[in-house]
Image (tube, rainbow, N blue to C red; front, side):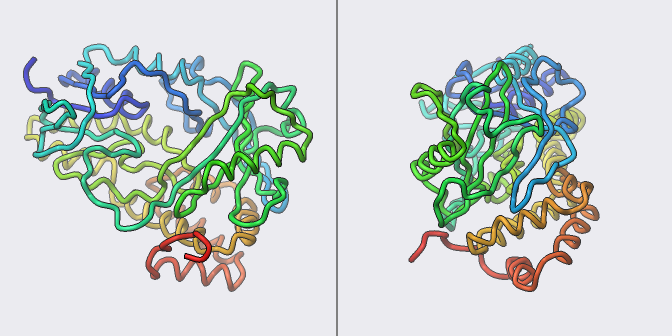
Length: 396
């Protein structure tokens, strides 16, 4: 085949959504992945109000009101939707009509429009997109510090087994209580229905530099569940999570970063699926409209679609919040989230979801600042100016 218009590297939800969107607009599109037919094993969710209008109802496995527990319990005011992951994958795959699927592992982009594969071959396209998730195979920018990562260990159990932790009040977005009985780095329980009578119970470290080890999370989860009388079966399926939450914006020359690789990951939640699905048709439209003006113009417009000025400003706000959290004494973290969840509902919604509402995000942060004590105010302000935390390891 001739040179492609667009080559998307990475066959996860973001990559598939963008490749399908490009092909539907008539662009000659390719999708490269080491294992394009491999099932997805992660749990994906988003707030119900973020669900794209064209996403079939069958892709949503469960919807439930969201709640959080910091020092006290809070109703978030909106529903949480958990995806039926095989159905989501099948839906996105069905929309790849016309997309040329390539099997291989990208190892770099030696020049604009060229992707080098591990077998020594090359693929060419007018515009190359890195949707390779946390690996970001087309971004050669070295990391100057230990990454801050979200890590989690979970078990999937029947609803009956999870009943002591789940009730009609809905999913537990965060439960910061120390029911695991340990001091040290704070972790929370994430407990959500998966549909089909199953529930995911997951001990999560929101962010740490470096990520909290999975054996620690496993130990805490089992202790927490025992505290509540939850006895998971010995053969319960587990879920292990580890991804970076402090990636800088994609720096690959001549490459568009998309999805988690952009990064579209919200450091306060770890979510990126909703943003990826919402942006995919917009990025595809930008490429389709401007490719006739040349690849450089199309790439520039697509980058600005992913990262308009407002989104870049909010990205900076969120990184300041992340560094403040990393500087916080562990025993003060639940109190911080108590203040956050006590904010008016519009402020919480804007901070957790909006990528383009600078005024609303600033208003939410200002409201939180006013409610904070002097110590927390100092942490929030200093994190805007001090170097990033090098490590959260004690004694290093």
